[in-house]
Length: 324
Ligand code: UDP
Ligand code: MG
Image (cartoon, rainbow, N blue to C red; front, side, top):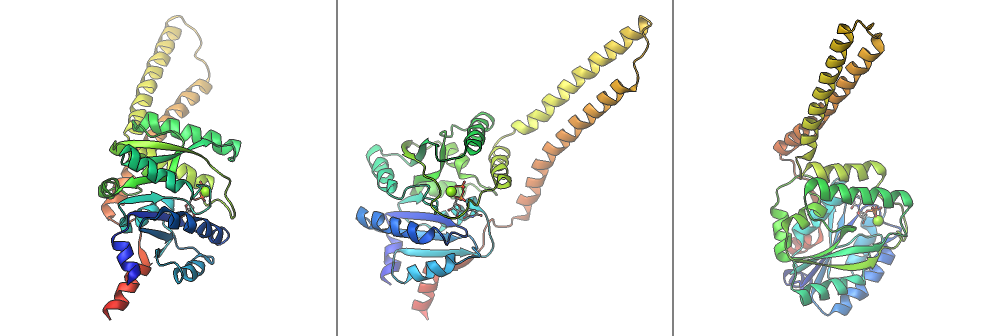
């Protein structure tokens, strides 16, 4: 009962997506709780268990008994980082909402700074920006830098460089984000695209404290594609540019053939023909691929399949118990 009141009036919600984080979870929660207790505000923690297959739900249940401000939302199937964040945001009730990873790469202590910055600057969004990425591998650094460059260039959204998903948002921002009816909503694009007043707080991104990254290369590429394709028509225009380029090449080769014929030059063998034919085939396939990306998304959208399904919510269970 007391916990429900807390939830209703929370000043701060902390949304934590977690997927198979049994190794790091005890130390994460152990570090998070004193920080939040020390803030002297009403808060709630929304742990979104993204259908973990390890001991994560068991550990959460254990902590639930001793931490009234903790709310556990378990998804029925693994929905992925961004969808898990959306699930948490849709349930957060706080005036301010922080999203943070469970692996201690984002220091929980910084939440105090994010909140202070938001209140002092009267801004809607405070981005946690990685001051240095020395704890990342050279590969991750390079791909990340490419990702942010592409994102800014192609989507036309002024997304702060090196801001991940560690950020604080006002209630208005969260409501606006949730109103963006977009499948595969990438918060890194949607939040800056709103253009609400914002500030940044720099921090040193630590190495993952324990466990393995849940972002293999395939998922990273997937996130990058979602970010660009969901927000921009640039890839479609790419098809047009390739088409123009192909047209130019065709004109040139025709000119070459005509001039060669007039001057009585022997026509070169079929190698050049094959090269040109395959080059065109490649261009066409690429264009079809780009179109396919969009068509595929239209298909997905018209299915209107929710991006996440909640299997369990400790707050709802508690109120059901109260009613019965
Ligand atoms: N995560 C999730 N669902 C997934 C993959 C990841 O909820 O399908 C969570 C994960 O538990 C972590 C956060 O998203 O709290 C970021 O993932 P991770 O640290 O593995 O990514 P990285 O920091 O390596 O990019
Ligand atoms: Mg991580």
